[in-house]
Image 1 (cartoon, protein in one colour):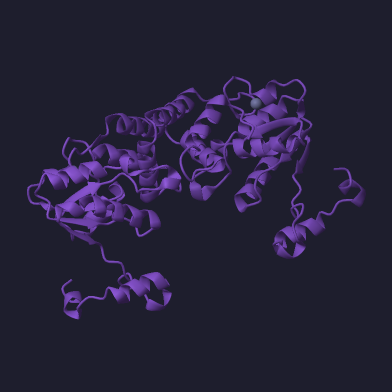
Image 2: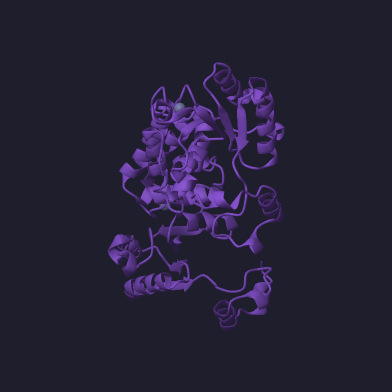
Length: 205
Length: 205
Ligand SMILES: [Zn+2]
Ligand SMILES: [Zn+2]
């Protein structure tokens, strides 16, 4: 692209560094900002700067937080003995939205993925191990996505925690509530039959 | 969404103000920035701020420019007597990329669209009229998109310039080079037959 302005070119370049934002989209977004009030751009720039420079991670669960201890870890009504292992803050938000979980989390910060150069040492696995080792944790729930990387990570952590003899579980996979069986993929449908639950249990919620 | 951090919430909110960026996408983009080097976020914020506060528009053609007169208007090898009327800087870039045009531009800054509250006075039409009135312009080429708004705008400008007796033209519409006739829409195909050109002319390029 042949830009008539270095300022425009630079802004489009930086915007296009974001994942899924090509040069064309970046240009469209930047031109939109130029048509809006100057404040909108300045507020966006400030919010991003404030986030990136001021962000903290909860020292207990590694969730994004504005305070040393996140709201969940700081809440005495949450059960610290149950720890749900998730990939990132989006998973925490998704599970929190269900209002079905009252335990703590442990945010790994990713999945083990040799292809992407992510090894166990790049995640917060050691911190989880120490948390379990120091006592008080009764159950660890694996809630990573069911991809090869997710399964690998689950298994790696499972082996790391084995010696402590705590309960480990994984979230149930199955047909989404309200979905038609015929449209479900075979693997999901297969697992949902294999891991069927007593009918009485399905009436509880 | 239930955010664990006000800083995160604010950044996601500002990002989601961009067109086509929902809350989910905004969150994905912001979390991506958090995983990258701090510099990437600071450079994005700075580029947007610099653009929005430092942007100039060419005093002759209203194209985005870092200088009072854009590179095209300042170039003595471009023909100032031919003026191509376009909607925004993206159209200038698209036409420049063809390397087929050596005249000047006039950037309207939009199209007349009563539904969106855009009237002739919101565009740079008066400036175009004055440019033509002051002499030196021999031809005005309309290169707006062929939508109802584009056609309305073309016709409005055409009427405004009528009194000056200059040549006006519009870019050719037709089947894209390399496209199959059978997949072309009827309107385009119809126009391309109606506005057929002498065969010899098609051999020139
Ligand atoms: Zn926490
Ligand atoms: Zn210019």
